[in-house]
Amino acid sequence: MSRPVHFEIHANDPKKALTFYGDLFGWTFSKFGPMEYWLIDTGEGAGINGGLVARRGASPAATSPVNAFVCSVGVDSVDAYVARAVKAGATVAVPKTAIPGVGYNAYIKDPDGNLLGLHERDTGAK
Image 1 (tube, rainbow, N blue to C red):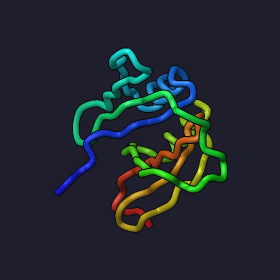
Image 2 (cartoon, rainbow, N blue to C red):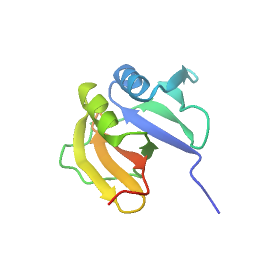
Image 3 (cartoon, one colour):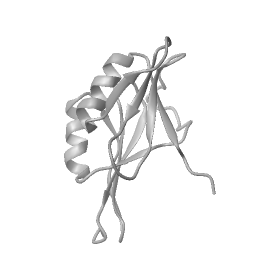
């Protein structure tokens, strides 16, 4: 079976995006090669690492439909991470929603308009 092994974030302002994701999740970055590309280390444990690259075109419009895979990041509190993300320049795309018996999801748009899911496991969610 094939599984995702890497993700990419596209950004018009890579330095701003590095700061946003570093501050929000504690991710670390290392420049890769001569191009505008940074490897993302998301930490230890289950999950995958990724990359951040300079966008080759305009950011998605606010009302654009999703045109990519949407990655969700596991967090200990959707409420806390939504608040942190908004404080750092994100907007709420889909507010916190219960998935009964599984947990809670919310979706934000980073300052560059990229959609990102936040997932909190809670088997008591109703």
